[in-house]
Amino acid sequence: MGVYSVDKLIAEARKLAADYYRATGKPLAGVSGEVCLHDAIRLLDLEASQEPGYDAVGKGPRAGKRIQIKGRTIFDEAKSGHRIGQFRMDQDWDLVLLVLMDADLEPFEIYEADRDEICEALDTAPKNRRGAMTVARFRRIGRMVWNREEGVVADEVWDNQASTV
Image (cartoon, rainbow, N blue to C red):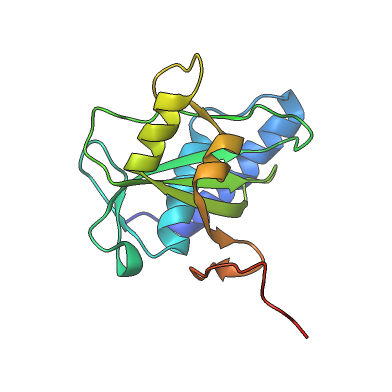
């Protein structure tokens, strides 16, 4: 065990990567992936995996699910077309978590989508490079499972016919 805890090292990496982006206008390669992996595991109570093809194994409501974790830092929300890295379609996994981070590499939303939803979205996308998707499309097909304001989002059915009177 080193001198520093993993949480402390991630906090320092988060700060360093944000400062680097502000100074150069470029992301610090590899840091956001490690930060979002750490955040998803911590915030959604997952277990890190050493197996190829997926990053974590679910516990609780995701028990036994093999999970790919993707992250995207949104430095400028006014820009559109933010893309997610390719999905490893040739590997065994059950669902994907997308961790969205702000310019300080702090998570603000996490979405999930299962393999069938991802496959269908990729198959129906026009002129799509196999395995690539935009953040906007993932948000449309996925479900928000965590946000900064509420923490874990309960799986509720929204009823726009319900009366508040």
